[in-house]
Length: 84
Image (cartoon, rainbow, N blue to C red; front, side, top):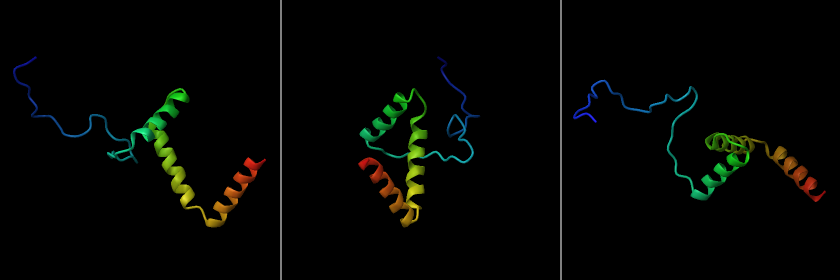
């Protein structure tokens, strides 16, 4: 280990650049929720739990933009399928 290090050319920020179209954020998630996403990725044989969270959020957003009539039709179809 050196006595001193030269940080004059150092830069602040993430070591790996953030890809275009992505924003680095810090959020707090409940432990059980995060565990669920990690376990789902493990059961699928690997991957990225953050991508799975992103997919779940996209699904939620797309459904909340769905017109009420489409939502009702989808829910009725799902319930009829379950009833068999």
